[in-house]
Image (tube, rainbow, N blue to C red; front, side, top):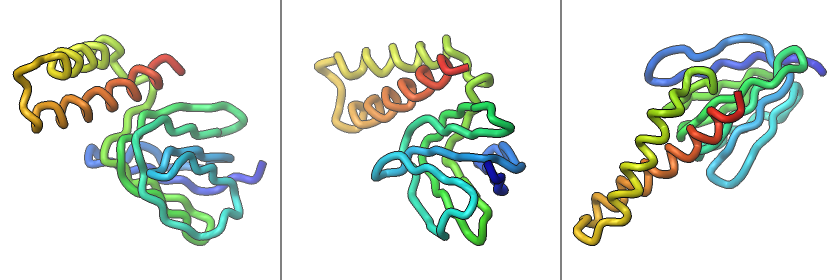
Length: 134
C-alpha cells in the first residue's frame, strides 16, 4: 500500500508522526477509513478505537473526541484524549468503569453526576476494549 503522512496530537503533546498505510477512526457519524489519495476532508471524532497500519502491522489507540483532517495527502488527528493500547492501564480503566457503575446504580445521584458517570463509563469501555487489543 502507498503510505501517507499522519500526525496525532493531544493536549499531552505529540503522540505520533510518521508514514502510515491506513488509518481507521471513529467519527461522530461512524467509522472512517483513510488511505493514501483520500479526498480532503474534516471530521469530528467520537469515542472509539483508532487503528493505524504501518508496515502491514496494526497499532491500536483509544481516541476520545477531537478532529481529523485530511488535506493534500496529509492526515492530522487532533484528539481530546489519545492513548496507545500498550500505554493503557487495564486496572485503572476497570476501576473507572466500576466507579461509573456505582454512580449509575445510585438512587441519590444528581442529573449532573449521572451525565458525568455515563461519559466516564463510555471512556472506560473504549479504554478496556483497546487495552485488550494489544
